[in-house]
Length: 236
Image (cartoon, rainbow, N blue to C red; front, side):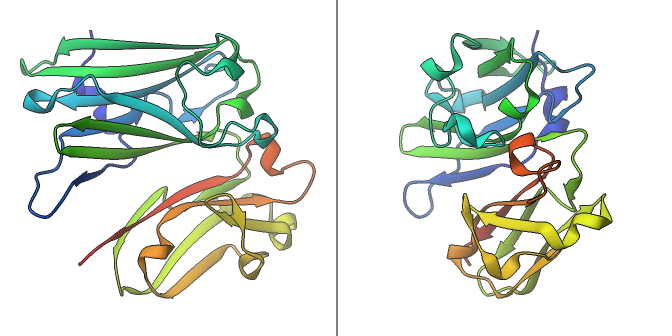
């Protein structure tokens, strides 16, 4: 049985309504294994989207935002029914009741039978819709042996906030000068070689998914040994 006690693994949740004064859809996205360990989690990764109570909906979609192994060219594609995964992603829709007796509907994607962890390390998106309401959740899955790790996976700020930073912990000090940054998959050379990047004055354009990785062949982006972060910008 699926229980909401698993929700402590929640990585990020951003709900949105279509129009002002529209209540947000009650939805949660999570990964049951947000940090993949080669010895124990080598064969399965679970990505889940929950809709809860009166907001239960079967209209839940799971999407790839970016994968560490960029050679597979799966970014921005649907996770379920994707032929590129060669039947190694199994999706199901489950209606159940939690410990408090509250009904929930869950879309589950089980990525199985893939020995290369970098094929499952990355960022995923859960989207749910019911009536005129919708919600998005971003799910980040890291490699347990990452040499570059985020100080925080998700940071929420407001428009016009000043001196906002995103940073990483570099576990191999000899490669800090080789650090590269991307935002939504696009490199920004002004940030290269830095463990911390800063934003003097936040705008909506700063929202997105950031990656920090090494250009070194031993620790580079293709191996998944790097950091993913999400910056959420709230409108005032």
